[in-house]
Length: 322
Image (tube, rainbow, N blue to C red; front, side):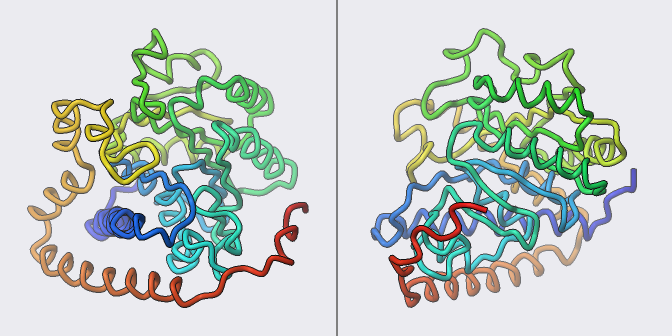
């Protein structure tokens, strides 16, 4: 496997920062009541989005879930189209009709997101079958949360993918909570990946280490691309905000401050940033310039969304069927 360059690491770092800054701005403006859509922030989980998508081509496909902002941006989705969609405006990536849980960017291989728990798993599996049948060299990535693994359709999809040796990698972002219910109160087994041992290659990794995420997922993505079939990768991570709100889980009453603090110490952005600070003399200047530029792009996106028009009611039934 090719060694990552300093530029590669900087690229992943700044993409994580883009996701974090974007979601922090969304959270800061959400209570103004201009975004009439539920939001599910991935603050704290940026490494799984960036580490995986770093290994993908533009035509590889990613199928996401309700917590999809980071996946969308990491795959190359347009910022202005995303912010407009959160404001339900006509220039949004789903025409203003989808909202936060239904981001789409077909031009960069982000074809659909499902708000149904595990809803994207069979759809992504079907896409991998289509890739195989058409002789494509592309792969499919399916993101799911830990609670999605409790849905029967996940087992059915994986069994089918194994049978057909499909070019697909299932990425489980195990943030230890289903809404506000901790994993240990839902399952006897503490590791999601153990449930699929014996079906396909499974591995559990540190989902807050973007370099580990990139390295391990690259291995299995390339195996899938080479015809070796699917894999299941559990990324152990943590979300710093509530399931579908702007406050923290501590404020919501289901996370302890001690637990939150212990995971905050493993913040994926701080971890890679500390490494780059030691390795790259120009990093501090680059970060300052990046922050200024991305703040400007974010403000432009929010301003454009505020000025844009709502979608026309006569278009509400369009694009529902292929």
